[in-house]
Image (cartoon, rainbow, N blue to C red; front, side, top):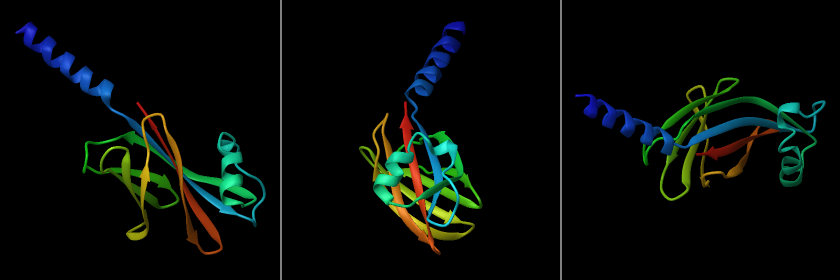
Amino acid sequence: MRALILILLAGLLAVAADAATVQCRLIRATNTSNGTDLQLRDIATQLEKRFGYKYYRQLGAGKGTLPAKDKMLRLDVGEGFTTFITPKGEGDLMVELYSGRAAVAKLTVKLKPGGHVLAGPIGVGQDWLILDLTLRE
């Protein structure tokens, strides 16, 4: 009986060790604000170079374990926005952004373990939304 419990426990630990964690940050880009969030200092240069806006503010962030292929991960990323992330294949992720029940954007990104991608921009009024996705093992 003990051997069976140890085998089951070892199997569960092996599955947990293989699981990848995805982090998603929702960022607002604008030219009519004052200052970039200190939370974004790690990617501020990339944001300015790629999108060209003066100011960036993190609206929220979510983190979770990436599910198996074709299973969906739901992350609340702040200010009423939710992302749904679905693995589609070798490094491909389907990312859907919702504001309440309204679909805002549907994107496909390539993201390998240890990787990072800036997805967007997604136009909202005079501003833009950007998703910062990071995948860690």
